[in-house]
Image (cartoon, rainbow, N blue to C red; front, side, top):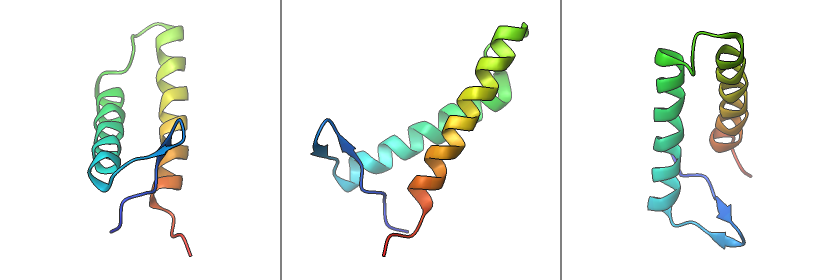
Length: 66
């Protein structure tokens, strides 16, 4: 698998930097699934929304680029 081309403020990340970002996102998603952001309505909603955004980013990271 090739790492995603990620650009931060106009600067392309190296392969290692892109990998680090991908692993950090996966780790955060895992933590959210396991622990969430609280048991109140706000915490559950924030957890749900963060996981949705992470899924969107995951879709971009793992899509094939022609």
